[in-house]
Structures are given as C-alpha cells and as structure tokens.
Image (tube, rainbow, N blue to C red; front, side):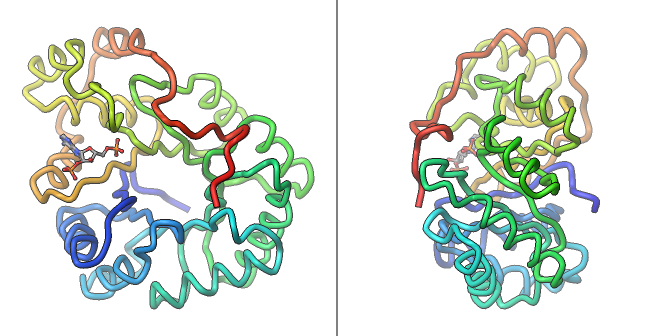
Length: 265
Ligand code: A2P
C-alpha cells in the first residue's frame, strides 16, 4: 500500500467547520485524511470525502478504534459503526488509537483488526501511540506487524529511538502534532532563520524536516490559507546544515498523556 507523504489531521474539528476544512484540504491536494472515533467527526469527514467528487480509491482514509472499544467483539463493532458514520464501505487504514496497557485488551483488539482487514473492511491496519513494549507484544502474539505507528513527533520531540525501532521492524512513522501545538516551536529562532533562508514559513520548515527524516506528518488547520501552505512543502529542501541545526532542538514530549500509563477511552 502506498501512503501519501503528508496527511490532513482533523482532531478537534467539528460540524460544518470540519466538512469545510476537509474539502479545502482535498481541493489543495491532500490525499491522506486522518480521523478517529474519538474525534466525533467521522460523519463530517465522510461527507466531505463523498461530496468532493474525488474517486474513493484516490483517497487514503484513516480512522481509529478508541480505548473504550478495545476487545475482539467491541473492536469489530466499532469499525462497523465508524463505517456507518463515514457512509463508506471501507477505510484504508484502521489504527488502535491508544494501547491502554493497564486494560491489556489491545491484543484482542489487534486480532479483531487482522480479521477486519481479511474481510475487506479496512485495507491496512496499524497502531498509534504504541511504545517498544506494546509494539513488540502485538507482533510476538499475532505475527502481524502494524503498517504504521502514529506518534507525537516534531522538532521538539524527535523520537529518535522510536524511529529507529520502526525502521528495524519495517513500520512507517506518522507524526501527530507535527507543528508542536501549544509550544513556541513556530517562533523558535532556529526555525525562523531556516525559514528566512528558504523563503518559507516556520510551519513549512517543521513539516519538511519530518518528511526528510522519512516520516509522514499529519498537520491540521482550520484556515484555508494554512491548509494550503502546509501542503506546499515539496518545492524546497532543507540542507545538511539545516537538518543538523534542527537536530539540536530536542526538549521532550509536549503532551500530558503518557502512552505507558495514560488510559485514553
Ligand atoms: P489553525 O487551525 O488556526 O491553523 P498540531 O498539528 O501540531 O497539533 O498543531 C495544529 C495547530 O497549529 C492548530 O491549532 C493550527 O491552528 C495551527 N497551524 C496549522 N498550520 C499552521 C501554520 N502553517 N502556521 C501557524 N499555525 C498553524
């Protein structure tokens, strides 16, 4: 399965604003759209896709099984419910949203997703926010490696160890919060200098950095101008000096959620 180099995220987008944003993203050229049962906007995302007129097989649509639906039967029903809300016959990528290791039901969930893939309800399966332990465990128990692991990743949280592990296991890294939401990443002096050098914005620098490291960023925006700007990251290239300067920016996670301990339902 081929995945686009950049996707469009829809976390915290609701109602008509969500429909408009996804339509704007599709019109701008995005072909990877990322939603989740937890975002409560699958109906809007599905409507935007159907109304876009773009052939369904040209769009890669991701949704996610939420924590409260972990378990074999629960996950199967949750996928069918997502498809009903989306108004679609299949998704392209179905992810486990959080491992919730304390509940210890993510292996049953994964086994259900293997069957959903065999039945054609999803073209591919993957995970999100999985750690080395939870990744190793689903692979060891089922023999099935996730296509992707979608994790927090931006220049302030570079996830070097997880990226190395993914490379060893042949897992694609998708980056959530690639713009470092709730931080001052986009006004960081290092990014400002690099952006000026290339005549682009700091957001474009952050996204380009993620892509050049071999990851797929999933930025989100509700502004048409920023949706278009974030897609315009293929007409310039960061040089070795830029990449080295950005490698020094590591600070750690910006999230209050820890995939080792947090339960996200
Ligand atoms: P807005 O919807 O007003 O554009 P992240 O994906 O890292 O969580 O960050 C998303 C946030 O970054 C959103 O709040 C979005 O706000 C903002 N954002 C998205 N694209 C840009 C951009 N090109 N420049 C500045 N802010 C942006």
